[in-house]
Image (cartoon, rainbow, N blue to C red; front, side, top):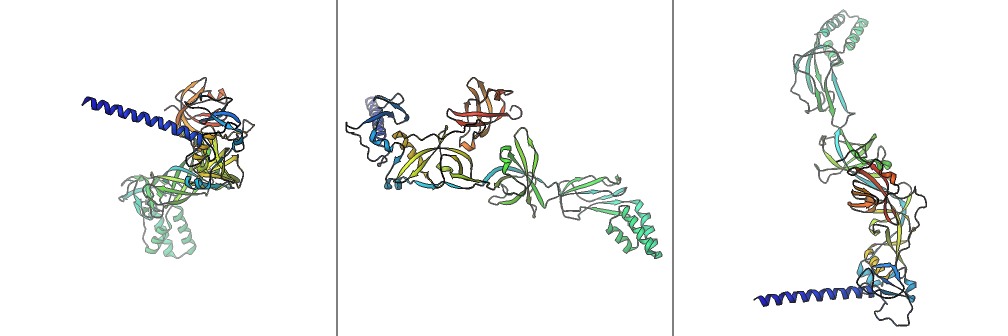
Length: 495
């Protein structure tokens, strides 16, 4: 039984070893012959001796050139030759039409035009503070009755709140009725004016004039429909003229308070359309407009509050509900852009595969701007009307690396004040001579997820006042050596 087990183990080990050896041979043949199916058609594993060799290279590090054959210092494989007759094709990858179809390559045009952008944020519903009615005592009196109301109740317009007895009104109304019986129109008009100045509502004066009897009890009611915010009346209490007895907030419309990062507020304007989606109403989109951009920024979150007004005719929207908000910012000046899926981000730079005639594809380094709705602005590296690979570009990029094709670097800005900055928030983990180590969130404009890494500093003075554990907002730029911190700002206190 033991011998059988050992034989099984040996057989499994031998099979694994053969699989590894076969995989290494297949990978090496791919490195020599290109992608399967004739990606590098025309190359052969056996090359005539009379072909001139320009240099040798490792397909995994094609930028490094060697003047003689041998083992690669990077990988356990032989260096590959680059021949003089292949130099004309050195900067491009060529594939046939059949393989193009099999790989599912899809091309997209480099387009120029205004690029609108959408901003996604989260908001919280609050009451519309402009739609507020205050109920006050116009004259001193006594509360005779309080109706069954309480803060938080939703009322209709003209809903009764309390009955208020105003003794001084009784004498004024008796005088008014006496003048009415006398029949002097001038004196009657003067008496009516005194009743209004005493704080008596016009409806109550009409009731007194029509009924011929004094009406010293006033029923206080809600001027508008909405939610009761304050109710400061109790049966038997005495009130003075000007006392606030109730406060009602209308529900015909509500405010949506949206926290927008301060770097994203440049394209937001009053009356801009907004779409809101609430978890309480799945699948439903509510349309609103920006009613105000508040003047102060939150020093902890580095956000600015944008106020959005949403109609609420049926009263479904209640304060405290959260919503996903989408603000559409119209495009400004014309910019050059490509589909975001066409961009290959290596961490140090960005590339696209530019399509040329005859089934040739050339890697091109590009400088990028902002990204929105699946489109990325190209600042440098492409021209309008050119075509780029939007699907399958990673296979072409791999083949270019195997062939030693290197993309030309774009010219970087000469001024230190003009780098393209990419921002994120994070926490300082360590500070040393190498720079600052940050546990940062995603850099959206770089397509870079959150992680912990060390960044060099453009200026050592950026660390002034910054300590390990501080929450910060960091802005980085891309350089030849990688990402570099251009701006570092503290965000409030430590967590």
